[in-house]
Amino acid sequence: MGDALIASRWHIGVNDPTALAWAIVTGYLIAAVLSARAYLEARRHSMSIVKIDSDEARSVRSMKRFWGLITVLLVVLGVNKQLDLQTLLMNNLRRQAYVHGWYAHRRHYQAIFIVCASLLGFLGIVVSALWFRRVLGRMALAILGAAMLGLFTVVRAASFHYVDKVLARGPFGRLGVLLEIGGIIVVILSALLWSHQERMIDRVRLQAEEGQVRTPLTTQGSQR
Figure 1 (tube, rainbow, N blue to C red):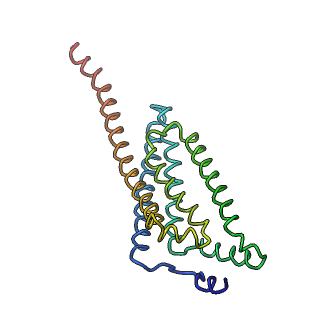
Figure 2: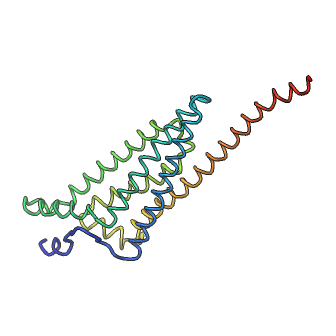
């Protein structure tokens, strides 16, 4: 047990200097920047249409809150990718388990933790779906990406070495890395698609407003 703790000793600073880790951190940064841009676009959009379409303004405010939460989540996960704070937490838990004599039964407590975390994760998805139900169809892809990253975080945090072995060398290969990278890619794609769709909606709305302005002027000209 002591050897395991020494081997996995946490220290402040860069804990994973590999190219893959830095690539993932870069992915988090790109996703965070795009999500922040989507947040700013949603903020601008909600302010511009609040007097024109109150229902759409409420929907856009919901999307603004979502993109704000996603931005914070991505920044935290990106920083933690190198700080590896879950290792510090797990080392402390292992130490306490060893000192108090329940380390031999860690699989039982690990299973309880995973079940509880899964239930909380499911509850979080349900609450998010209800909270963002007004814009669920427009945010489904981003919610999927956030759920993938949340699942990876929960499973990674449950590690007592066993889950790490499954994620890194199990029958599914590097499942954890694929889940993490997949979640980042889904968030990036969803932010790009959302921004494109919202620009198209703004363009159509602007054209419709210009048509409504031109119609009376054209009518007045014909009457003359």
